[in-house]
Image (cartoon, rainbow, N blue to C red; front, top):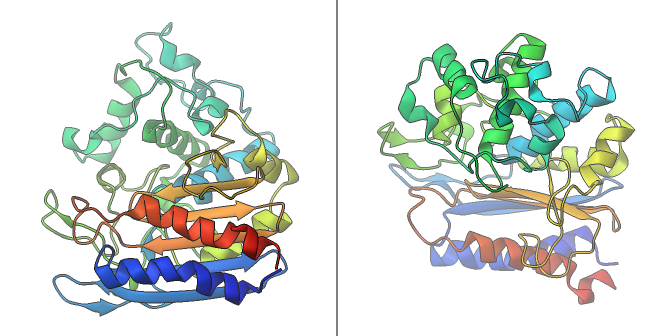
Length: 339
């Protein structure tokens, strides 16, 4: 089997090429084995506008939708393992006022497990921030809105609702909770990779959450977590070894709910972000800002690619989908699996 350092160097080649062509400003790539061996490479810039700042191995990244798996999924599954949440119960067990003016509506039947597996009829995304930024009122709007019913899709709304359920259970906002593993909801801005030059907020976002809905809510279950590469690799090692997590939590992370989803995570399938050479045990997830984590249980291996691909704008072609797949293919090609 190839060394973790060899794997990382091989997988960083397409990353370095993307930085060189200007497709992405910068990146950090990390690879970990379950026994603790790890290697990290970085390159490019953490910020290019308005001023340039170098990328470092310990740069903080806005993890975007990795929040769903690194925070919300873990918190919900750990509560389920302790018996405080029944995954097959409706959200109304913690959110009894959800759509309270229509007690027979479909939204009141949605369960925790369905939200974790994106098996609900909620839309993929909604510009909630355009309805206002008063946090209590915005939360009430989310709970009382008559949601359009559509086909099951990957939906931020699922995890916003799971975050609201956690807030009710814990009696505090998501941003006041301890996410563990060194993650933060409010990191030092000067240590962060910049994201977008946001037209709504009128500035380059650095150290404040890029996702507009998470920003308006002051913390949410779908986005808002910040972390460094070593923090993410720590999570990956704990998931691979089961250290510090309930046995049921790790088992459900691996348990399929559909052809493409487990509880919270995406599972290996044709055309997915992990590339074409992953075995069936691999789970992963990505974030809109350019982040991602993949965990291979059969090989006892994990890798994470963190980029600031939305800086200074999301409206450019970063090639992030192809880059993620190229990194995964480099790590999982037959040549490197057999060495």
